[in-house]
Image (cartoon, rainbow, N blue to C red; front, top):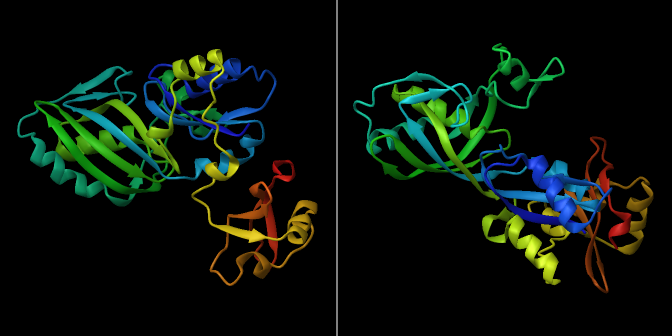
Length: 302
């Protein structure tokens, strides 16, 4: 097996969803992981990698994400979302759909964002949320992220805006909501978050846990995606059987053999066309000295 795209419900953690999928599939003891954490209160696209598919998890984490979010203005919380404690309330005087839409312009493109205290990022070996739960605030350097798209798709008076976001890895939509509230001078927090895309995977491909259970119970085909499906965002090159064998053995190969005259540095999928269709040989990159560096090999995928 390789990968399933789950429509995660609001409530359970991403890890809990992985455990549920493993139980449903009867894959006790087999490796399983997810391609990008969703906060428990969030829902939507959660790629679940199974067995050999866990090798591609790092490449899924690097992918852009898309969300639909609901922001509530006038109230700030310690977690920056609706699961936390209220820490401040503000007047909504002057707030409207027009002012919210205008303020969004300041958060498009490359921006600096301070990660929230209630996050799994680690400082001195401890997650930030561990400090936050003890009432401690730890200095966090701002990180550069990119917001490719940020649009208001609706304003619900007096205090809620619905947003569509497409952003780079590492972007916290909770922080985006809080920063937007500060920009408007009224404070804000996130009350709903739904991931609609993660890399090449969309909500239209996703299956709920209940639907997955039903398919398994009645023996219906499962919407399993291949390794190549999972890596659709990466460039591809085709290698012949002898070149595939060199990569499989981890032997030296000139990068020109892989780049084939294209401006590529990696990661790149090396593909072998076989009688049963294309198969993934390896994910490779330029080693900095004119050779090939193998990031992940897949000798068993053929």
